[in-house]
Image (cartoon, rainbow, N blue to C red; front, side, top):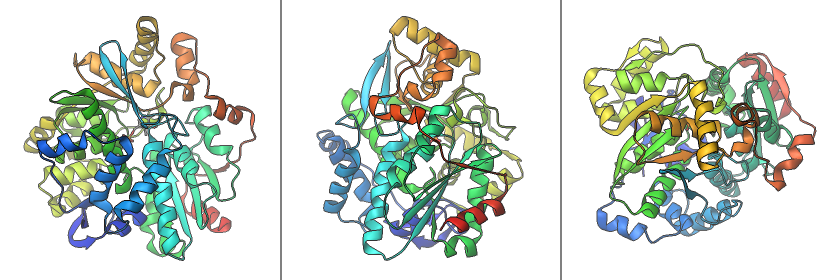
Length: 455
Ligand SMILES: *Cc1c(COP(=O)(O)O)cnc(C)c1O
């Protein structure tokens, strides 16, 4: 499989470059030059597979020039052996809505599904290349924990995680900052998630710096994450045994829902992908009326979605403009100036596949309360947004991606129902353990210096 950048598709890359670099030198995101489209017959065959077998089939389409199918299969088996669910994900019911529980990995959010795989993919790469890699990643709370768990203790790899100081839940922070391995560094930035993401992007854009430290990225723009996430759309479709399925996806950086779009492009009969946002509703405004103008980031009960500029949206822009990288680069320039309004013809194309809605803070609390009272289930605030949006759109015949375990957000659930879920036994130690992180200003040079001083 060959890949190109969304901003210049005249140059081709292979999976190794795409995976290790994450972001193209021109600032664009990598996309494959072609996609396999499964026939109904082929989907029938895939339906018989276990989660691990299905992952192997799908991911192998994209990575076969990097890792053999046999090696991939054992790497995947190894990656998902850390999950509490044998089949990795689980479908459950909340009233008439289906939940796709994605939080049974080591750090209790859907990010583990891709990250456990990626951690082992780095190890595989380093077993063949005599190198030291430094991973730098921005997190709105869950990516960092998942990445740390996947990378900790691995040789020839360091990981630096930037989170917005005081803007993630304390449980989210503790899961990251109580890890003791010497290759793990937590940095709290005095700013919001977008600031963290911008610092990481400018570190990558400084090619001299990023090359000098062999910098690598595992943010949700990394194509390897997207393909690992596309798998659970297929898996849940097969389990439901219906002709078409729609998904409601609590959305921040547009990574998870883009994985659903990818599954649809590959022939999975998905009807609508519902983009569910909190009060940071730029994607809802964009998809419903074409208004892609960012505002100040608000802190909400669902911090992992407190994002204004959704990096992966660039991939959608590329596809709806018929893979034209010139147009995409021009639009990205407009977005940078905060001047992008989606053209009517593009908006019509987007609305064939996507619906959107947002939930405000009170609605999120009400949904947690209602579902606790009526269905005896505690929803985490992100999943609550996914459920709330489905209620608001009266679109109950759909699968809501349940992106985090409620125990990660005790303040939100205490606020709604005066109750919180306990952490699973094996994670309770984080609550009383010393934390280790460095607070730094919202300044790229300071972060660069910190990274250099540690490696
Ligand atoms: C990261 C995250 C999201 C948003 O996912 P994106 O891929 O960034 O859209 C939603 N919910 C939870 C719990 C998350 O950790």
